[in-house]
Amino acid sequence: MLNTPSLRIMLANEMVNYNRRNMETYVLNRRNELLGGVLKNVESFETVEKRITSDRLMSDEGKRAKLAEEATKALANFKGFGVKIKEIEDHLSQLRNKLFVIARPKRDETLQFLREQEIRGHYVDMTQPERDGAFMHAAEQDKDETLLALLDAPMGPMVTEEVKERAFEARAQRVFPADYKTYEQNAKLLEVLNAMRNGIAQWMRWLAVAEETIVETLQLDPEERLLASDVELGRLSPTQFVAARS
Image (tube, rainbow, N blue to C red):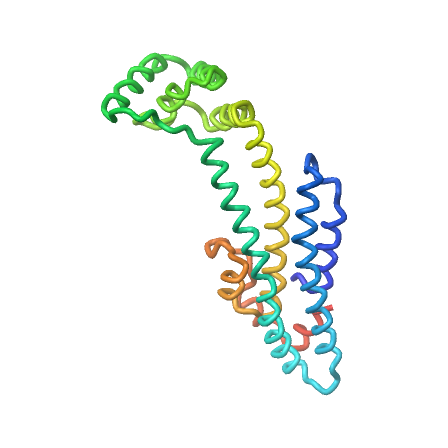
């Protein structure tokens, strides 16, 4: 269970973590800008939460209901954070299509198939290590048609996935150095932001906010299981629920 003090500490610690390997200063600044807004929202809710939990006239059952109500309202303040993450994800998707996808030549499809079939014929009798080596060599020489032929064979790729990733990584760094650096830095930023977003989601769920509301507001993948279930929440008595907030 992730409570409000724990989330606040996690966010604050991340914002002063300058040991992120190979993360440029401008990316660290962007991280702090985004997480700074999140931290303020968490601190704001913490004030409300303390007021509710310290209310001696309210029952634990009433506190639980009030905390869930206020948390649902507070969740709306994190919508912008989800939107910003989605923007970064979209940008990375565009960069991946440029860096790691090879477009087929614009020629007759039948002719292109025959050309690639002929290329594959030169590698059929090779061992797997030999084909992998040939693929790496073709990537180094910008023989895109050879790469396409070996990857899109009728019976499946003729090279291993590991070699494909290594070759495309090296090719992207060499052919698109600026775009690759942007991609790499944004991928590091997204990793941090996603970890914090997941923390917010878990925090909100343990405040009894509806799962579908959390997923929609934070733009989470609905197929990814990371939130507490109604059964897990139901196991907490009102007293336990309130006690867990500190």
